[in-house]
Length: 197
Ligand SMILES: [Zn+2]
Image (cartoon, rainbow, N blue to C red; front, side):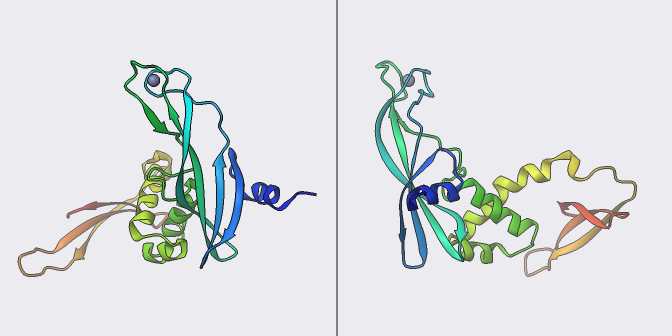
């Protein structure tokens, strides 16, 4: 029989993280975890690092039972023991956190999927995750750019349609802005857009 913490660790599904505590906030679940890595290497000189202390990074994870989840990740700070090395101390790089360390990588991927695949407004997704608009937009850029850049995304196009559309109407001092869309006419799918006409 698993105790509660062992059960949460199994359900959490984040390898390399130990669950320390689960508490209920006002309108969120707070899960305190620590990274389990015990050996570190200096990114500057490559020598074996010494553990210095820990620092907490708070990030949003996937919501759970309709409630926002905050992960308080107790990350290790390392120190280089080489006196002549310019890299003195650093916080460990945690693979599961996104580039800006506001969301877990899987929460960022889910936010991107909701915007890109389900066409949900960025603001609505941001509200659900309990984060600001730019956090979701950054996740869309981080996770969506490799998808857009993937050459296999488009495949072979036999009939290409090109059409310009006004994107923003003219106002005093500003001319009408256009975008030009490239359309696969057989699949009836937009494959790219480019500014201007
Ligand atoms: Zn070093």
